[in-house]
Image 1 (cartoon, one colour):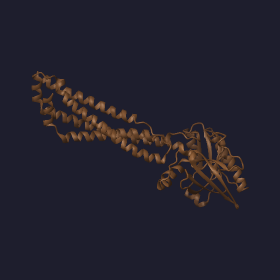
Image 2 (tube, one colour):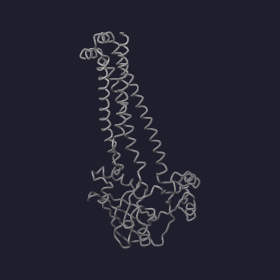
Image 3 (tube, helix red, strand yellow):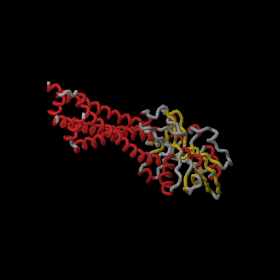
Image 4 (cartoon, one colour):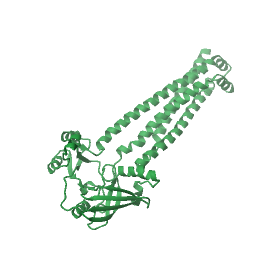
Length: 399
């Protein structure tokens, strides 16, 4: 065995093996990263909302430049709402009710520096909100108002305000620690309320309060002032029904909810990741050929000496074992280093994603590990068999 290792060390080309190592490392790492990134990012587009059912769609009228300049009204009339409700894909329809008064709020976490901002409230019929009746109610005269915040609002707070001031980040687990003070000013009246944040919604880009609070506050602070709704919410039998897209296009309506676009985004992401993984596999295949070429050249240089070893009693398995162990060791080192690089890169992008989507749960790395292990086993087995066949060819030739 020592004689064979000496032959191997004498003729080994470090540059060729280094080329194989880094090419295989890059290919394996790209494949593992593509699989892991897809698995980590896909819940952003497919996770279910805690408060809004997946079969609910938020609809608004398409806003155009001409319509804006001409002052065209983009509100829904009673006829528009009734027409949507009569469509075969629609189970029920409700209208958004907006606050008619000025609202501002100060929001902080654990007594930290508050974020002061002007805002507005909207409400939808309670049947469209998946919250307990006990929590999603407002009694006239109460100073506590249930609130559901849009997840994009929290992302701006975490990624902008809190990040720049080293303040605590907000997540679903810390929702009870959010201190929200609401201030209403209208017609010379001033009122302060305590906002009870129930959670965050990724499908409603508005600050949602109970219908009972909107009705009471509008009548109290802006009596007699009403407006047609600019948005409606509807429950459909199947969000992917082709008739929905046809009707919306025909009427000039936009589906604000990202549920219809999520499927397209997921498909696009899957295509991109597949292409990246294909490049990684191609690089791995090319690196495999580089390694096999290097091994074949080593064996070819030592053909006469290997024949002599076989003649004096060395078995083909014993002769081929050092070459097989060399390739196995290089493949194992490649796998371990690729996995280490994957952990480093994943920790970085999961930190960034966590700031934007604080509630996104970090999954495991089993698919990436399985992919890397599969490539390692496949390449190693092919290398071992190819080396043994080469040595067996020398063995038969000596006969």
